[in-house]
Image (cartoon, rainbow, N blue to C red; front, side, top):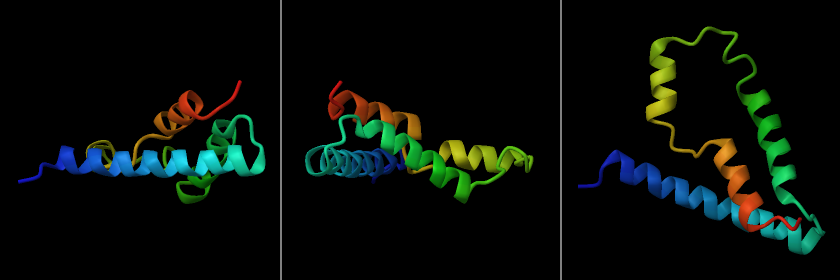
Length: 90
């Protein structure tokens, strides 16, 4: 039986692979030296559109627990750090 942690880790790996693929395209096809910067700005913009005032709306304890325990996406910081480490050309 698969545990939730194993399932979440599988989703994280898939998300990281997608991020790496997209960053390689930015670097190799479009000449971006530091795709992590573009990914950072894009993720920040998406979050501001999808979750405009999350903290201002006083999330309930349930909202916080749900976000922390059942979030199948890696954090934006993890995603950007991975791209910076493996793809960026400094």
